Length: 315
Image (cartoon, rainbow, N blue to C red; front, side, top):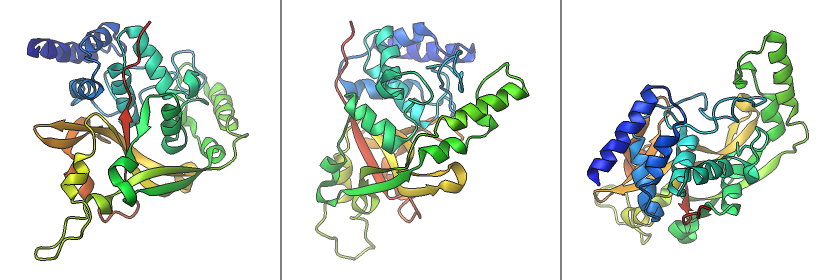
């Protein structure tokens, strides 16, 4: 088993080095090791991608014939935080290459309709509710937080978000300046019929996760201690970093509720946050250490936790 794991790791590394972004052989090799136990498969697959580079431009798009983003529909060589979670989930829930292609499309797009307009751009408005409806995830934040659960709200202004798009939002080749200008105008106008919507998202407050952390000699409260709450987070679950009403109007025209995504992975008795870290690569950090640094943060308030649902059967 160890030998197979090493071979899989080498295959992925070699394909990335060769510039093979969409190697079907690598996909088949990875999913051939799936056990049907989602937590184990999420951990095993995501470990294969440790040290893969972070791509700040967004590595996935709608393919070579796309109107606005011709990046590939899937790839294994680089990730941002969301595409890392999407790719690992799609692989873990697949028995065949066809399953994988179908799953990653269904996770990334509303009802699996491949278009920029139908991409699940907004985590709390699109990505989470659409994927819960599609059966990929279940929100278990309230199971973890119990009565201490809180709700984040943000006004998602999709129209203003589209209007904020700039020339570098287009990821296309072969267009001259005039064609690029027309395509950018088309992209901006794609949002003209959307109205602002308030998106709500439940989350486990950091103040609850770390409530047991008191100065020496101070009496602890009756609340569940920090380690007990962290033990409720299942390995292989999706962690969303929650920032209620995060005001990015001047940056991209809208508020947001979520700023980052990753996976909860248990190994050697510890809970880790495995994520595509901005400006770095896919890496592991102790969950307690990662979250503790945000205890006094101006906008980060907690985590939303999604359990990945059971294996989707192939044809």
